[in-house]
Image (tube, rainbow, N blue to C red):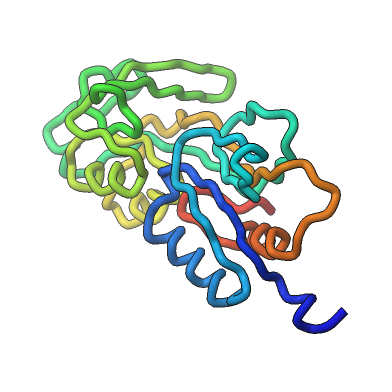
Length: 218
């Protein structure tokens, strides 16, 4: 086999949720394309669960429980979300001490319907679901984080987004014994015995990427 034949090449069709349609992922993808100039990418940014085979998609990134048992799935990370607010927001307001206290506070939502939603929180073996609403709803954590930082309400943000902000005193973690359930992040692709080189190198780079949306698996 020649050196040219061994190099990953060809069109790679990738599907990612809207939450990944932001600068950090674009930077990762740009670096990938520069590292593998023989690969071209066709990117689908959508919250629809595309039929990978029907749409001829090579790989998709999916958060949470998988619905399709006919596809191959590799865990690439995990995510947990904290209840947080800015000191600016908390000034002069009562601090929530239990999940139900949140109902008296406006929240910054992700994927809210008519600016309303439901937060699922867990603490050890306890589990609650609380109804939330607020002045801002968005489709990505970057926006939700920005408005939480600016004091528009309480947010439920990935730990990777807020750990440094909490340490710096720019955010306060509320209900510290509570968080979202752990969310597993998968890379999924159609069942096949042989992985094309273009897909294998993308999987390798994806696993090595320090994404702000998930914690790398050890």
